[in-house]
Amino acid sequence: MNDFTLKDSKKYFSQTLEFHKNNLLFQAHSHHPWTDVAYEAMEKYFILVKEKLDFKWNDIFNDYFPRTQNLILEMLNCPAHWEVSVSPSTHDLLVRFISAMETKTKSENRKLSCLVSLSEFHSARRQFQAWQQSDQMIVEWVEVEFSLLKMQVFLEQNPNTVDLVFLSQCLYGSGYFFEETELLKMAGMFPHIYFVIDVYHSFATRPLNFNNAFPNMIFLGGCYKYAMSGENCCFLVLPKKFPFNPTNTGWFAEFGELEKTSALATTRLVFSQDGYRFLGSTFDPLGMIRYVSTWEYFKSQGITLEKIRWHVLELQNELVARVINAKLHWLFPPDDWSTGNFLCLQFKNSEELQIMAKYLETKLVWFDSRGHVIRFGFSIYQDISDVEKLALVLNNY
Ligand SMILES: Cc1ncc(COP(=O)(O)O)c(C=O)c1O
Image (cartoon, rainbow, N blue to C red; front, side, top):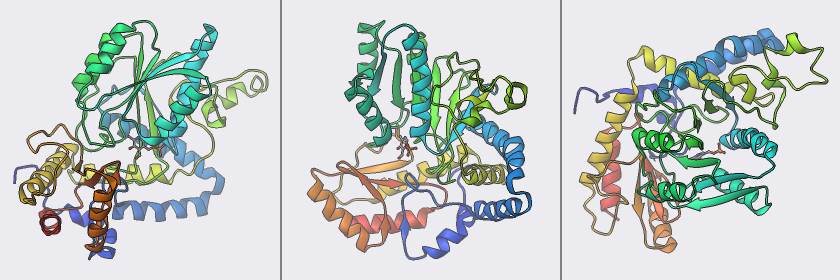
Protein backbone atom coordinates (compact mmCIF):
# COMPACT_ATOMS: atom_id res chain seq x y z
CA MET A 1 0.00 0.00 0.00
CA ASN A 2 1.19 3.54 -0.67
CA ASP A 3 -0.23 7.03 -0.12
CA PHE A 4 -2.15 6.80 -3.33
CA THR A 5 -3.90 3.50 -2.77
CA LEU A 6 -7.66 3.94 -2.87
CA LYS A 7 -9.31 1.99 -0.09
CA ASP A 8 -13.01 2.37 -0.64
CA SER A 9 -13.46 3.36 -4.26
CA LYS A 10 -15.89 0.49 -4.89
CA LYS A 11 -18.55 2.64 -3.29
CA TYR A 12 -18.76 4.84 -6.39
CA PHE A 13 -20.07 1.87 -8.39
CA SER A 14 -22.48 0.37 -5.88
CA GLN A 15 -25.34 -0.18 -8.35
CA THR A 16 -23.32 -2.26 -10.79
CA LEU A 17 -21.36 -4.11 -8.11
CA GLU A 18 -24.48 -4.96 -6.13
CA PHE A 19 -26.01 -6.51 -9.24
CA HIS A 20 -22.79 -8.42 -10.02
CA LYS A 21 -22.13 -9.70 -6.49
CA ASN A 22 -21.17 -13.15 -7.75
CA ASN A 23 -19.21 -12.08 -10.80
CA LEU A 24 -15.60 -11.04 -11.16
CA LEU A 25 -15.67 -8.02 -13.45
CA PHE A 26 -12.39 -7.57 -15.33
CA GLN A 27 -13.65 -5.60 -18.30
CA ALA A 28 -12.57 -2.06 -17.41
CA HIS A 29 -10.79 -1.90 -20.75
CA SER A 30 -13.86 -2.68 -22.84
CA HIS A 31 -16.94 -1.61 -20.96
CA HIS A 32 -16.19 0.11 -17.67
CA PRO A 33 -19.04 0.10 -15.13
CA TRP A 34 -20.79 3.43 -14.82
CA THR A 35 -20.73 5.35 -11.55
CA ASP A 36 -23.77 5.88 -9.34
CA VAL A 37 -23.25 9.59 -9.97
CA ALA A 38 -23.73 9.00 -13.70
CA TYR A 39 -27.06 7.35 -12.96
CA GLU A 40 -28.22 10.35 -10.94
CA ALA A 41 -27.03 12.71 -13.69
CA MET A 42 -29.09 10.80 -16.27
CA GLU A 43 -32.18 11.17 -14.09
CA LYS A 44 -31.49 14.90 -13.78
CA TYR A 45 -31.13 15.13 -17.53
CA PHE A 46 -34.53 13.52 -18.01
CA ILE A 47 -36.03 16.25 -15.84
CA LEU A 48 -34.17 18.93 -17.80
CA VAL A 49 -35.56 17.53 -21.07
CA LYS A 50 -39.05 17.25 -19.59
CA GLU A 51 -38.96 20.90 -18.61
CA LYS A 52 -37.05 22.47 -21.48
CA LEU A 53 -37.68 20.23 -24.49
CA ASP A 54 -35.74 21.66 -27.44
CA PHE A 55 -34.32 24.44 -25.26
CA LYS A 56 -32.23 21.75 -23.56
CA TRP A 57 -29.59 22.47 -26.21
CA ASN A 58 -28.84 25.79 -24.48
CA ASP A 59 -27.80 23.87 -21.38
CA ILE A 60 -25.87 21.37 -23.45
CA PHE A 61 -23.89 23.85 -25.49
CA ASN A 62 -23.48 26.59 -22.89
CA ASP A 63 -22.76 24.33 -19.98
CA TYR A 64 -22.12 20.58 -20.53
CA PHE A 65 -20.09 20.95 -23.72
CA PRO A 66 -17.56 23.53 -22.40
CA ARG A 67 -17.23 21.53 -19.16
CA THR A 68 -16.55 18.41 -21.25
CA GLN A 69 -13.98 20.24 -23.36
CA ASN A 70 -12.16 21.58 -20.29
CA LEU A 71 -12.07 18.20 -18.59
CA ILE A 72 -10.76 16.42 -21.67
CA LEU A 73 -7.97 18.97 -22.06
CA GLU A 74 -7.17 18.72 -18.37
CA MET A 75 -7.03 14.91 -18.43
CA LEU A 76 -4.77 14.94 -21.49
CA ASN A 77 -2.87 17.85 -19.99
CA CYS A 78 -3.07 19.56 -23.38
CA PRO A 79 -2.67 23.29 -23.81
CA ALA A 80 -5.91 24.86 -22.56
CA HIS A 81 -6.59 26.74 -25.78
CA TRP A 82 -6.68 23.64 -28.00
CA GLU A 83 -9.93 22.79 -29.77
CA VAL A 84 -12.12 19.88 -28.65
CA SER A 85 -14.94 18.33 -30.69
CA VAL A 86 -17.12 15.41 -29.64
CA SER A 87 -19.02 12.76 -31.52
CA PRO A 88 -20.68 9.38 -30.86
CA SER A 89 -17.66 7.39 -32.12
CA THR A 90 -13.97 7.77 -32.89
CA HIS A 91 -14.73 6.34 -36.30
CA ASP A 92 -17.02 9.27 -37.04
CA LEU A 93 -14.31 11.73 -35.99
CA LEU A 94 -11.63 9.95 -37.99
CA VAL A 95 -13.71 10.13 -41.16
CA ARG A 96 -14.43 13.81 -40.56
CA PHE A 97 -10.81 14.59 -39.82
CA ILE A 98 -9.58 12.82 -42.94
CA SER A 99 -12.07 14.81 -44.99
CA ALA A 100 -10.34 17.94 -43.73
CA MET A 101 -6.87 16.62 -44.57
CA GLU A 102 -8.05 15.79 -48.07
CA THR A 103 -8.94 19.40 -48.77
CA LYS A 104 -5.20 20.04 -48.58
CA THR A 105 -4.09 17.18 -50.84
CA LYS A 106 -6.91 17.75 -53.34
CA SER A 107 -5.86 21.37 -53.70
CA GLU A 108 -2.39 20.00 -54.55
CA ASN A 109 -3.90 17.56 -57.05
CA ARG A 110 -2.78 14.42 -55.28
CA LYS A 111 -4.03 11.73 -52.92
CA LEU A 112 -3.60 11.81 -49.18
CA SER A 113 -0.77 9.54 -48.04
CA CYS A 114 -1.00 7.87 -44.61
CA LEU A 115 1.27 5.68 -42.53
CA VAL A 116 -0.80 3.51 -40.21
CA SER A 117 0.39 1.19 -37.47
CA LEU A 118 -0.50 -2.50 -37.81
CA SER A 119 -1.89 -2.44 -34.27
CA GLU A 120 -4.87 -0.18 -34.72
CA PHE A 121 -8.37 -0.92 -33.49
CA HIS A 122 -10.82 -2.44 -36.04
CA SER A 123 -12.64 0.81 -36.85
CA ALA A 124 -9.46 2.61 -37.92
CA ARG A 125 -7.92 -0.49 -39.53
CA ARG A 126 -11.03 -1.25 -41.60
CA GLN A 127 -11.52 2.36 -42.63
CA PHE A 128 -7.91 2.80 -43.78
CA GLN A 129 -8.13 -0.56 -45.61
CA ALA A 130 -11.31 0.59 -47.35
CA TRP A 131 -9.74 3.91 -48.32
CA GLN A 132 -6.72 2.03 -49.64
CA GLN A 133 -8.76 -0.54 -51.59
CA SER A 134 -10.97 2.11 -53.16
CA ASP A 135 -7.84 3.97 -54.20
CA GLN A 136 -8.96 7.06 -52.34
CA MET A 137 -5.63 7.38 -50.58
CA ILE A 138 -2.17 5.86 -50.32
CA VAL A 139 -1.79 3.80 -47.16
CA GLU A 140 1.39 2.19 -45.86
CA TRP A 141 1.32 -0.12 -42.83
CA VAL A 142 4.05 -0.43 -40.23
CA GLU A 143 4.73 -2.73 -37.28
CA VAL A 144 4.96 -0.87 -33.94
CA GLU A 145 4.66 -3.61 -31.31
CA PHE A 146 7.36 -2.90 -28.66
CA SER A 147 8.90 0.08 -30.47
CA LEU A 148 8.42 3.05 -32.77
CA LEU A 149 11.73 2.37 -34.50
CA LYS A 150 10.31 0.90 -37.73
CA MET A 151 7.92 3.81 -38.02
CA GLN A 152 10.75 6.29 -37.54
CA VAL A 153 12.94 4.52 -40.12
CA PHE A 154 10.08 4.53 -42.65
CA LEU A 155 9.55 8.25 -42.15
CA GLU A 156 13.27 8.98 -42.45
CA GLN A 157 13.53 6.95 -45.65
CA ASN A 158 10.40 8.52 -47.15
CA PRO A 159 10.73 12.06 -45.89
CA ASN A 160 8.32 13.76 -48.27
CA THR A 161 5.73 11.13 -49.02
CA VAL A 162 3.67 10.90 -45.83
CA ASP A 163 1.00 13.45 -44.87
CA LEU A 164 -0.38 11.72 -41.81
CA VAL A 165 0.57 9.05 -39.28
CA PHE A 166 -2.09 7.13 -37.34
CA LEU A 167 -0.93 5.46 -34.14
CA SER A 168 -2.36 4.37 -30.78
CA GLN A 169 -0.59 5.42 -27.60
CA CYS A 170 -1.54 2.12 -25.98
CA LEU A 171 -2.03 -0.81 -28.37
CA TYR A 172 -5.44 -2.45 -28.02
CA GLY A 173 -4.23 -5.98 -28.80
CA SER A 174 -1.37 -6.11 -26.32
CA GLY A 175 -1.56 -3.14 -23.95
CA TYR A 176 1.90 -1.97 -25.04
CA PHE A 177 2.19 1.70 -24.06
CA PHE A 178 4.19 4.54 -25.63
CA GLU A 179 5.20 7.28 -23.20
CA GLU A 180 4.19 10.81 -24.18
CA THR A 181 7.88 11.75 -24.47
CA GLU A 182 8.31 9.13 -27.23
CA LEU A 183 5.33 10.42 -29.15
CA LEU A 184 6.43 14.03 -28.76
CA LYS A 185 9.94 13.17 -29.91
CA MET A 186 8.60 11.54 -33.06
CA ALA A 187 6.17 14.37 -33.87
CA GLY A 188 8.97 16.89 -33.24
CA MET A 189 11.25 15.09 -35.72
CA PHE A 190 8.72 15.33 -38.55
CA PRO A 191 6.96 18.69 -38.17
CA HIS A 192 5.49 18.58 -41.69
CA ILE A 193 3.54 15.35 -40.94
CA TYR A 194 0.33 15.24 -38.87
CA PHE A 195 0.33 12.60 -36.13
CA VAL A 196 -3.13 11.39 -35.10
CA ILE A 197 -2.71 9.66 -31.75
CA ASP A 198 -5.51 7.32 -30.67
CA VAL A 199 -5.55 7.69 -26.89
CA TYR A 200 -8.59 5.49 -26.23
CA HIS A 201 -6.54 3.03 -24.15
CA SER A 202 -4.48 5.63 -22.29
CA PHE A 203 -7.05 8.35 -21.59
CA ALA A 204 -8.19 8.38 -17.94
CA THR A 205 -5.77 5.62 -16.96
CA ARG A 206 -2.99 7.85 -15.64
CA PRO A 207 -1.86 11.48 -15.72
CA LEU A 208 -0.90 12.15 -19.33
CA ASN A 209 1.38 14.97 -20.28
CA PHE A 210 0.74 16.51 -23.67
CA ASN A 211 1.32 20.00 -22.38
CA ASN A 212 4.11 20.51 -24.90
CA ALA A 213 2.24 18.89 -27.77
CA PHE A 214 3.34 20.13 -31.17
CA PRO A 215 0.89 21.73 -33.60
CA ASN A 216 1.16 18.63 -35.80
CA MET A 217 -0.37 16.41 -33.08
CA ILE A 218 -4.05 15.48 -32.97
CA PHE A 219 -5.67 13.34 -30.27
CA LEU A 220 -8.57 10.99 -30.73
CA GLY A 221 -10.27 9.08 -27.93
CA GLY A 222 -13.44 8.28 -26.11
CA CYS A 223 -15.13 7.48 -22.86
CA TYR A 224 -16.62 3.99 -22.72
CA LYS A 225 -13.46 2.43 -21.32
CA TYR A 226 -11.51 3.93 -18.42
CA ALA A 227 -13.39 7.24 -18.60
CA MET A 228 -16.39 5.19 -17.36
CA SER A 229 -19.00 7.15 -19.26
CA GLY A 230 -20.34 4.79 -21.87
CA GLU A 231 -20.89 5.43 -25.54
CA ASN A 232 -21.48 8.69 -27.38
CA CYS A 233 -18.68 10.72 -25.87
CA CYS A 234 -15.71 10.42 -28.21
CA PHE A 235 -13.41 13.36 -28.81
CA LEU A 236 -11.03 14.92 -31.29
CA VAL A 237 -8.49 17.39 -29.92
CA LEU A 238 -6.75 19.70 -32.36
CA PRO A 239 -4.23 22.49 -32.10
CA LYS A 240 -5.72 25.95 -32.23
CA LYS A 241 -6.04 27.22 -35.78
CA PHE A 242 -5.69 23.80 -37.39
CA PRO A 243 -5.67 24.98 -41.00
CA PHE A 244 -8.22 22.68 -42.69
CA ASN A 245 -11.98 22.38 -42.29
CA PRO A 246 -13.83 19.09 -42.91
CA THR A 247 -15.94 18.41 -45.98
CA ASN A 248 -17.85 15.80 -43.97
CA THR A 249 -19.83 18.35 -41.98
CA GLY A 250 -23.18 18.73 -40.22
CA TRP A 251 -25.11 21.70 -38.95
CA PHE A 252 -23.49 21.69 -35.47
CA ALA A 253 -20.21 22.73 -37.14
CA GLU A 254 -21.72 26.13 -37.80
CA PHE A 255 -22.89 26.92 -34.26
CA GLY A 256 -22.04 30.37 -33.03
CA GLU A 257 -21.93 31.53 -36.64
CA LEU A 258 -25.53 30.67 -37.55
CA GLU A 259 -27.03 34.01 -36.61
CA LYS A 260 -24.19 36.02 -38.12
CA THR A 261 -24.26 34.12 -41.37
CA SER A 262 -27.82 33.02 -41.99
CA ALA A 263 -28.04 35.25 -45.04
CA LEU A 264 -24.81 33.79 -46.43
CA ALA A 265 -25.35 30.24 -45.31
CA THR A 266 -27.16 29.08 -48.40
CA THR A 267 -24.37 30.19 -50.72
CA ARG A 268 -21.23 29.85 -48.62
CA LEU A 269 -20.04 27.11 -46.27
CA VAL A 270 -19.38 28.72 -42.90
CA PHE A 271 -17.56 27.11 -39.97
CA SER A 272 -17.40 27.94 -36.29
CA GLN A 273 -14.06 29.22 -35.18
CA ASP A 274 -13.40 26.61 -32.49
CA GLY A 275 -13.99 22.97 -31.53
CA TYR A 276 -17.50 23.22 -32.94
CA ARG A 277 -16.22 23.04 -36.49
CA PHE A 278 -15.50 19.30 -36.24
CA LEU A 279 -18.89 18.49 -34.73
CA GLY A 280 -21.28 16.56 -36.93
CA SER A 281 -24.99 16.71 -36.44
CA THR A 282 -27.66 16.11 -33.78
CA PHE A 283 -26.54 13.49 -31.24
CA ASP A 284 -27.57 12.17 -27.84
CA PRO A 285 -25.55 14.17 -25.28
CA LEU A 286 -25.99 11.68 -22.41
CA GLY A 287 -22.44 10.37 -22.85
CA MET A 288 -21.11 13.87 -22.19
CA ILE A 289 -23.37 14.21 -19.17
CA ARG A 290 -22.16 10.92 -17.65
CA TYR A 291 -18.56 11.96 -18.31
CA VAL A 292 -18.76 15.43 -16.74
CA SER A 293 -20.77 14.32 -13.75
CA THR A 294 -18.44 11.40 -12.97
CA TRP A 295 -15.16 13.26 -13.30
CA GLU A 296 -16.26 16.48 -11.64
CA TYR A 297 -17.50 14.37 -8.75
CA PHE A 298 -14.22 12.45 -8.60
CA LYS A 299 -12.38 15.76 -8.43
CA SER A 300 -14.50 16.80 -5.47
CA GLN A 301 -13.62 13.46 -3.81
CA GLY A 302 -9.88 13.79 -4.43
CA ILE A 303 -9.81 10.90 -6.92
CA THR A 304 -6.95 11.84 -9.23
CA LEU A 305 -5.53 10.12 -12.30
CA GLU A 306 -2.34 9.56 -10.32
CA LYS A 307 -4.25 7.67 -7.64
CA ILE A 308 -6.08 5.64 -10.27
CA ARG A 309 -2.79 4.65 -11.88
CA TRP A 310 -1.22 3.60 -8.56
CA HIS A 311 -4.30 1.65 -7.60
CA VAL A 312 -4.27 -0.24 -10.90
CA LEU A 313 -0.53 -0.89 -10.77
CA GLU A 314 -0.88 -2.35 -7.33
CA LEU A 315 -3.67 -4.68 -8.46
CA GLN A 316 -1.75 -5.74 -11.56
CA ASN A 317 1.45 -6.41 -9.59
CA GLU A 318 -0.49 -8.38 -7.05
CA LEU A 319 -2.16 -10.55 -9.69
CA VAL A 320 1.09 -11.31 -11.50
CA ALA A 321 2.77 -12.17 -8.18
CA ARG A 322 -0.05 -14.46 -7.14
CA VAL A 323 -0.50 -16.40 -10.36
CA ILE A 324 1.92 -19.31 -10.12
CA ASN A 325 0.31 -21.62 -12.65
CA ALA A 326 3.15 -22.61 -15.00
CA LYS A 327 0.66 -23.20 -17.85
CA LEU A 328 -0.10 -19.48 -18.03
CA HIS A 329 2.01 -16.82 -19.72
CA TRP A 330 1.64 -13.06 -19.44
CA LEU A 331 2.34 -11.19 -22.64
CA PHE A 332 4.69 -8.81 -20.85
CA PRO A 333 7.18 -9.69 -18.16
CA PRO A 334 6.03 -8.43 -14.76
CA ASP A 335 8.92 -5.99 -14.44
CA ASP A 336 7.99 -4.30 -17.71
CA TRP A 337 5.16 -1.95 -16.87
CA SER A 338 5.16 -0.16 -20.22
CA THR A 339 1.63 -1.42 -20.41
CA GLY A 340 -1.83 0.04 -20.07
CA ASN A 341 -4.60 -0.78 -17.62
CA PHE A 342 -5.21 -4.26 -18.99
CA LEU A 343 -3.04 -7.35 -18.79
CA CYS A 344 -2.91 -10.06 -21.42
CA LEU A 345 -2.59 -13.81 -21.05
CA GLN A 346 -1.05 -15.21 -24.17
CA PHE A 347 -2.11 -18.50 -25.86
CA LYS A 348 -0.48 -20.52 -28.64
CA ASN A 349 -3.64 -20.74 -30.72
CA SER A 350 -7.35 -20.01 -30.65
CA GLU A 351 -8.27 -23.57 -29.52
CA GLU A 352 -6.20 -23.14 -26.35
CA LEU A 353 -7.67 -19.70 -25.83
CA GLN A 354 -11.22 -20.99 -26.23
CA ILE A 355 -10.69 -23.70 -23.58
CA MET A 356 -9.50 -21.06 -21.11
CA ALA A 357 -12.32 -18.69 -22.10
CA LYS A 358 -14.95 -21.38 -21.40
CA TYR A 359 -13.31 -22.18 -18.07
CA LEU A 360 -13.33 -18.49 -17.05
CA GLU A 361 -16.99 -18.20 -18.00
CA THR A 362 -17.88 -21.12 -15.72
CA LYS A 363 -16.06 -19.29 -12.93
CA LEU A 364 -18.10 -16.13 -13.63
CA VAL A 365 -15.06 -14.09 -14.67
CA TRP A 366 -15.89 -11.27 -17.11
CA PHE A 367 -13.01 -10.62 -19.53
CA ASP A 368 -12.52 -10.41 -23.28
CA SER A 369 -10.12 -11.63 -25.92
CA ARG A 370 -8.32 -10.32 -29.01
CA GLY A 371 -6.36 -12.57 -31.37
CA HIS A 372 -4.42 -14.99 -29.18
CA VAL A 373 -4.70 -13.04 -25.93
CA ILE A 374 -7.22 -12.88 -23.12
CA ARG A 375 -7.46 -9.39 -21.68
CA PHE A 376 -8.17 -8.51 -18.04
CA GLY A 377 -8.94 -4.85 -17.35
CA PHE A 378 -8.25 -3.11 -14.03
CA SER A 379 -9.70 -0.07 -12.36
CA ILE A 380 -10.79 1.49 -9.10
CA TYR A 381 -14.02 -0.53 -8.81
CA GLN A 382 -11.83 -3.51 -7.92
CA ASP A 383 -9.70 -4.13 -4.87
CA ILE A 384 -7.23 -6.75 -3.70
CA SER A 385 -10.02 -9.18 -2.83
CA ASP A 386 -11.05 -9.32 -6.51
CA VAL A 387 -7.47 -9.96 -7.53
CA GLU A 388 -7.15 -12.75 -4.94
CA LYS A 389 -10.26 -14.41 -6.38
CA LEU A 390 -9.05 -14.08 -9.97
CA ALA A 391 -5.62 -15.47 -9.01
CA LEU A 392 -7.30 -18.47 -7.39
CA VAL A 393 -9.35 -19.12 -10.53
CA LEU A 394 -6.24 -18.86 -12.72
CA ASN A 395 -4.12 -21.06 -10.45
CA ASN A 396 -6.81 -23.76 -10.43
CA TYR A 397 -6.87 -23.94 -14.20
C1 LIG B 1 -7.65 1.85 -29.58
C2 LIG B 1 -9.14 2.02 -29.79
N1 LIG B 1 -9.59 3.08 -30.47
C3 LIG B 1 -10.91 3.26 -30.69
C4 LIG B 1 -11.85 2.38 -30.20
C5 LIG B 1 -13.32 2.64 -30.43
O1 LIG B 1 -13.62 2.87 -31.76
P1 LIG B 1 -15.07 3.44 -32.16
O2 LIG B 1 -15.26 4.72 -31.38
O3 LIG B 1 -14.99 3.68 -33.61
O4 LIG B 1 -16.08 2.41 -31.74
C6 LIG B 1 -11.42 1.26 -29.50
C7 LIG B 1 -12.41 0.29 -28.98
O5 LIG B 1 -12.13 -0.72 -28.40
C8 LIG B 1 -10.04 1.06 -29.29
O6 LIG B 1 -9.57 0.00 -28.64
